[in-house]
Image (cartoon, rainbow, N blue to C red):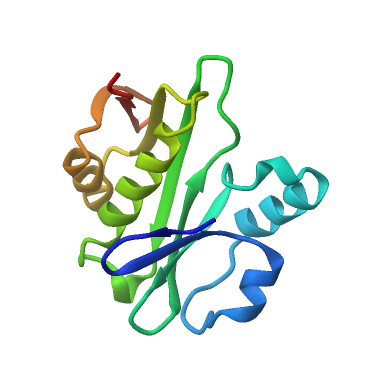
Length: 151
């Protein structure tokens, strides 16, 4: 399973993948270790957790993206993402999030993708606006966003 854009490969994170790719500047965070533990216990989590964002030009990891679990009872998934500092402000986050949302909407169990970011996280706000996500409110300094599948 691999998604491709003009500049990126977006691949579900596995132990095997991490061992084959350069993680020179990219740091493997605790969310990845937690996901890999979950994946070892339940292989159906693949695709509904962390995906690595890989620059196709030099085959290096420039960030991660993914969902915070399988679709819930309302057919909703939450997307999250992060790009390393040297690759920011180049449109990679928008490109990657757009692609993974398109992938999610091909699943019959997904009708809505949600996201959240801090009210002062201007780069993230710009990404979500470019993707035509709708701001639906604020809870404890976190802006809430959603995008519904077009039928």
